[in-house]
Length: 177
Image (tube, rainbow, N blue to C red; front, side):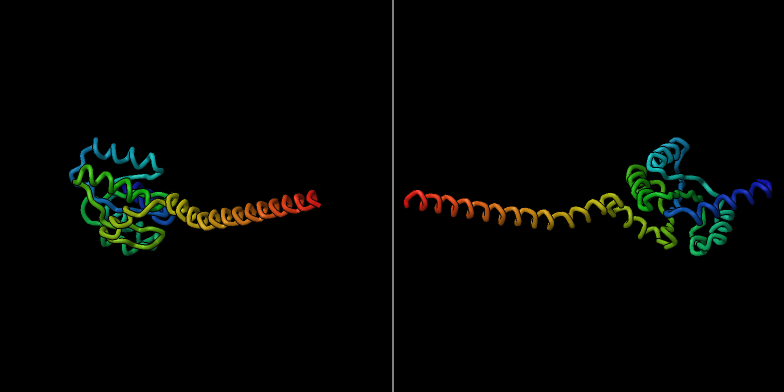
């Protein structure tokens, strides 16, 4: 690869490393073109990009982007998955793919600047997505409110029923006089 192409590649990787919310380093050993294409397709559906990188260029880019800790994981065949969306999505998609195939593996990840080991990344894949977490929070907040509304409705209904009974009783008293 000519020197100018290397500089351009490093600049692109610096941009990826500095602007992505989630960056995952994977080892793609044993994956043929068909399997890589399948993985890329699944990731693309979730707005995640996936590309094979040269370790030396990726290490330079990681250092320039301030992710020095990633350089120790840039050994052997390396591909990166990166996204600006939900940073846990790539972990989920790649983990599902790993369960099906088993030949690839995580090396490391950087999520919003925090570096994770392969074991930690595997744990991240079991977390619910951002949408699921938000819906659980909304449900958690709305459940007590729903209970309060139901309780207040019951109190109001009891009050109305009691007032109606008192009104009927007074009406009977007035008619009896």
